[in-house]
Amino acid sequence: MNSNVGGIDRILRIVVGVALLGAAIAGIGLPWTWIGVVPLATGLFKFCPFYPLLGLSTCPVKKS
Image 1 (cartoon, helix red, strand yellow):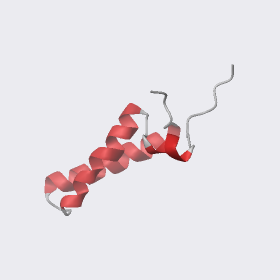
Image 2: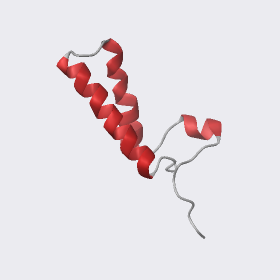
Image 3: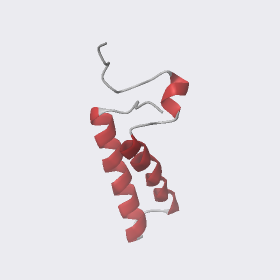
Image 4: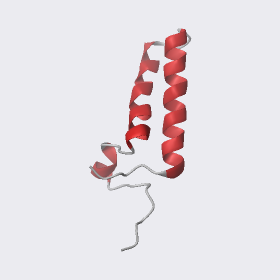
């Protein structure tokens, strides 16, 4: 499993995930706010399963 989420993409995913989960726990949002687990997990693990399907990667290119 190669990393395909990097930099700002990772930070945004974590922030959005925490915000959605915070709203869900506080009871502010609807039940769909529990979907915040997905961006939080993809940000923490630096891997998005949909990026390979779309041929995307936000990680910087490694020079070899």
